[in-house]
Amino acid sequence: MEKRNKFSGSFGFVLAAAGSAVGLGNIWRFPALAAKNGGGFFLIVYLVLAVTFGFTLLITEVAIGRKTNQSSLTAYGKLNKKFGWVGVISAVVPFLILPYYCIVGGWVLKYAVVFIIGQGKNAADGGYFVEFLTNPKWTIMFDLIFLFATCFVVFRGVNKGIESLSRILMPILLVLVVGIAIFSLTIKNKETGVTGLEGLKYYVVPNVDGYTFGDYFRVVMDALTQLFYSISVAMGIMVTYGSYYKKDDNLVRSVNHIEIFDTVVAFLAGVMIIPAVYVFMGKEGMTGGAGLVFMVIPKVFESMGAIGQLIGALFFIMVLFAALTSSISVLEAVVSGMIDKFGMSRKKAVVSEGLIAAVIGAIICLGYYAKSIFYMEVDLPNGAKGQQLLDVVDYLANNIFMPIVAIGTCILVGWVVKPKTVIEEATINGEKFGRKALYKIMITVVAPILLTMILLVSLGIIKLKG
Image (cartoon, rainbow, N blue to C red; front, top):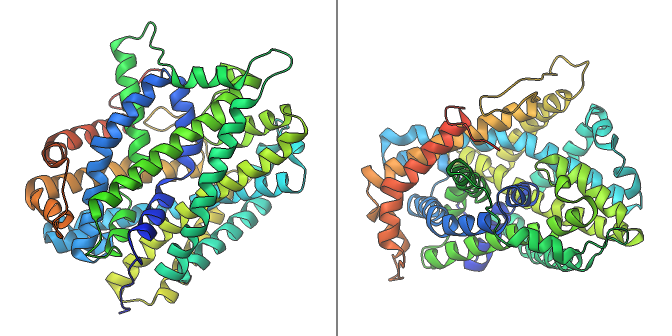
């Protein structure tokens, strides 16, 4: 078995973990949810959940990884043999996510290339994305390029690969996010007179006029699910990264930094996107998911005129960096599990998983091609209509398996090995654990209840309106 590598220090760990957390969900889901759910009110709810619910799940997983010195596949069983099943499911999640995340990363790469070579106007055409999506030759090619880049970084290892790249990409990503956000506030629609600052007001000022109890409940659940998917918990990543975290580094402080980084980028994603969409397309332009990034945003860039080509290129480069740092962490969770469980070399684990992901990815790409046997349009229990193969795999991984893993983690730490297991690991060098009382009540009672609600919404048992 290979000697386990460690991050060189807290800074490297925070950048790598934040790189995992800052992904496509921050960019295409957070702004849309904020716009839909009362602007500033959603932001307040999200922030409260981040420092309570998010902190609890993050520090638990990082502590489990550092304490056991194992990836998630084997870490849970090491804490308690009866909970080995949690590790197995947590390893299935990144295995399912990697193929389709690289497909979406390929979409981002395609659009980055289009804007870099000055063809951004083509991307603004209404049928451009659908035409690209339904051509498996191109989607598979860009998927494989993105997958290869992901594999190359993980192949190089924890220090030379993941940490080195994170130290380069994350500062660049942050600069691009801040720069585009500032630019977004300065734009003005010459025809209507609407400004970016008006869009910012729409984003940050709470607006709950006419809200019913059901509306408030929906906002809380939307903020909760967004945070849950955003911080990279319940998918083996934070346990794996925790196992690379040195014993003499301050775990609590690092988790706080990851929280802050992820929340700031999510907020700034809203500042980048909402004012720009508001200026050129109004409230009606706000949508979520792939449609926002690949169909709405290119139209906004076209409306900006010549400068839109440059801003579009920078935007998609930024999104590409966010996608790449996340996909690297997803692959690492799988590879680390293969090394720990089966004693494989890193080289063999990366090549094996890379080939599997390439095959599964090609099948999912064919799922958008109407003449393919893999084409489908199915309705999911959470209310989503006419979903393709990619959406089905995403639903299983994100909406079913991840909440189950998180609930199992809470039961294990909250009721079996007890919260002191995590608290003692986090304060092993005499560090302060500032939210100790909050942590205990969250991990034992509140978090399991909230996670169960997420699962019930995903299964369609609890239905959210709006």
